[in-house]
Length: 144
Image (cartoon, rainbow, N blue to C red; front, side, top):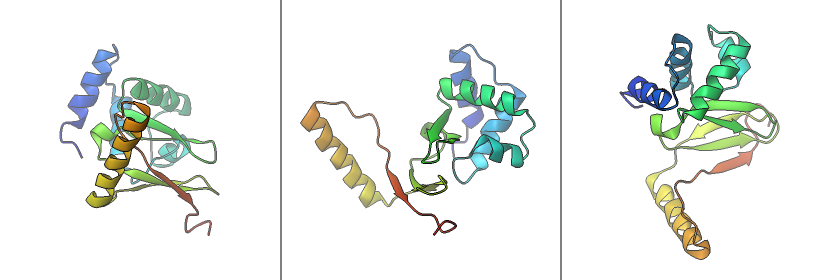
């Protein structure tokens, strides 16, 4: 995790003329400690001290400034995690039945192979690749 996470989020918010409120700070801390992307109901279950509508609004603002990444899984439910710049490079395991997302960090040799594949795709299509994401879709242990 990034040691200066709150300073970085504060700066990202200031660039979009937003403030780093207590509620937004709590959300960043909750996402920092989550082991996977989480839904708004899960944030409420984890003790978010905000109403559901405030969570939606604050997550949208954090997403707009680049601090939070929103994903929609196979169940069409939005899940949230800190942007990769604030956490670490990782990929996702996606359950095709319940939509659960799990983070997975791949070994360096696989990351290098993915980077080579991205370079090859860039060369084939003259497309500038900024980053890559890999989602492995299957069935989680709970749904198996």
